[in-house]
Image (cartoon, rainbow, N blue to C red; front, side, top):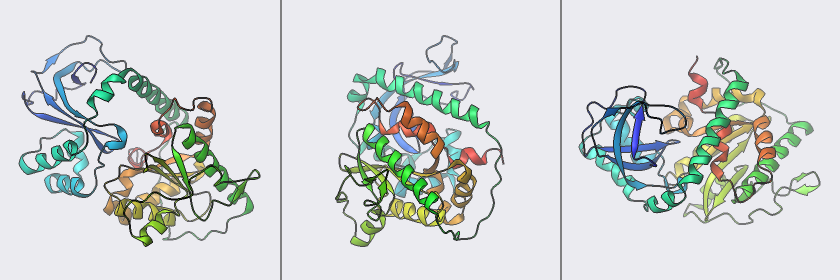
Length: 344
């Protein structure tokens, strides 16, 4: 957006023509619509801070969406891509394959149906560039520390039988408390699960200073009751933006079911969903997300994992930055299922 230029390490633009449209996807949501405005060329002049990307093509942005306005690749959008490229449509996206006719129109209309945030983004472009750089550095740091070790996916029983100890309950409350604090630091209102709001942590009820009424989303009473049991939800401008299930020892499967309910009943809402647990439970979370039950609705593509250890570190790092960070800061510590499966 800054240079009206798209770059790549490979010569992938040779068949692109002036007037072709380019859809930009960020975190599995449609983020912008651009148009090819010139012929491809090669240059080693540095214009980006994270690489040369010598194969380049000029583009002109038509429609840009802020994170909270981006339609997720769910519902009609997902169905459209599946009809064009099959269930493995992700390969079509990664290889930047061409979409034609009605398929292309559906994707384009999904972006144009949202308000155009181009002017707002351009006016605050420097801040977005700084945030992006900080997030890249944070992700690189976490990957270096973790060593990207191979994980083995183990098939688990449908439900894990667990009997939470007082220590487990304390860990659960600790994670909720950290998420509440971080949510408020990002400027969000926070919803705590209706059955947890009176639970005490360090002598203070978890629901203190949090929302007492869940926003009206036009859902049925039964759907609202299920969603209200999600452990922590960050809400901005009366719309959920991030949802968290804490899994210290309880059944991972039941938490994922609540998340799938959320995606099923409100697919138009661009909400990020996370499972938060001690790092030792990461493989179990990933194994459950790989189940066909969750793959069918695309939950495995949207639900990510955050370790308690990384959450604590992030909370400490941004403790004094209230009003200066966005909810997207959690992306810097979230791990996607695909990342875990790459080396298997």
